[in-house]
Length: 134
Image (cartoon, rainbow, N blue to C red; front, side, top):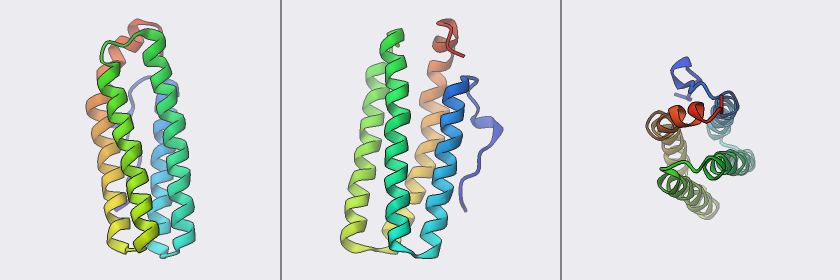
């Protein structure tokens, strides 16, 4: 079942929430492409996801640096692992075009989005708010 935005994902940081909503929308489109079994559409959807993920991650990382967020190193490492995972799976998909690999990708991305947002991102909210980022 595709991921849908829920109010419980809202952090209260307007720009980050908008980016997270966009990310969920891209995941939903990726899921649609997977179910249509169109390799070109799936590849394009993964590329769009990677591109948007890099944009969002760079935006968060800039805030971490600007505000000198204490846990920035751990958070940035998580972002780097995530981008590498997308690259690895995209490479695997291009070589095998295996439906199970595609399903694994969707499952991982949805789980990662929820887990990362709920466990990692929520940690920076009080710090961001304290520093005027809302």
